[in-house]
Each structure stands twice: as C-alpha cells, then as structure tokens.
Length: 142
Image 1 (cartoon, rainbow, N blue to C red):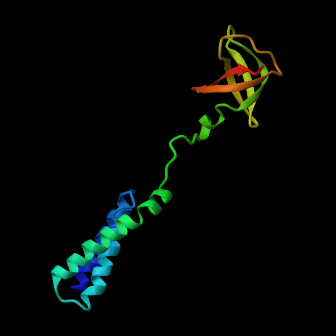
Image 2 (image 1 turned 135 degrees about the vertical axis):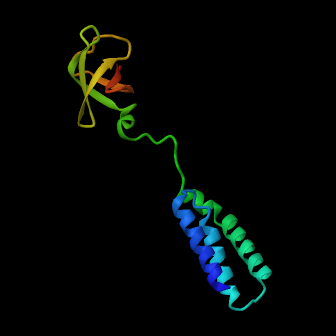
Image 3 (image 1 turned 45 degrees about the vertical axis):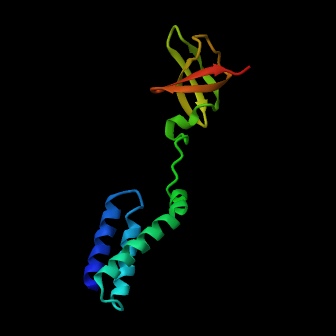
C-alpha cells in the first residue's frame, strides 16, 4: 500500500507546483505520513483517516505561517508608480500651452505636465502627483 500513498503524495506535489496557493502541499505531506503508517498498519481505513487528520492538522496549524510567506501587499507601488508622491526638480520649463516640460526624479528624467495647467520654471521643486502614460503630473512645492 505504501506505493499508492507515494503516488498520491507525488500527485499532490505536482498539483502544488501547478497552483500557487501553497495549500495542496500539506496533502502531499499527509500522504507521506500515511505511507509511513502503512508499514505498521494494514487497514486502509486507518491509513486514510491518518492521511485526512494529518493533512487537516498541518493545513490549519501552518495557516498563519503560510499567510506570512505569501503576504501580498496591494499597496506596494513598483516600477513607474513608485515615483508618485516623490519630489523632483524641473529641468525644462513646464509649459502646458506648448506641451513641453521635464523633471528629474530619482536621477531619471521624465516628461511632465503641471497639475493645474500653469507654467512652472526651471529649478522649481515639484511633487509628483501621478503618472499619466509616459508623463508625470506635477505640482510645485510651496
């Protein structure tokens, strides 16, 4: 019977690799525990009960640990959106009429538009309000 439990453990392990939830892994461990008990206990009902009980205990006892490992903070801004609310400096006059303007933020140069369609001269420190396509929308600091 141990071969069947080994196949079940392999199946759950492959299923865990396909999915991303870190949930099926504990059934694989439970199948390995049932495989070990199959060397000592002949009853398939007892082995199945051990599989279900051990999988359930592992699943619930490690829930907080798994949540820490797979914690996804939806508020973490990455790539271009990481510059929102940062301070930059105007390096080319921001002129909404001519559609010109550039700011330097974190060592990178960005095309810019003013938040309220005003002219912002070179050298002004600005706050990056949001990103709109390839341009940043800025507001002068007071």
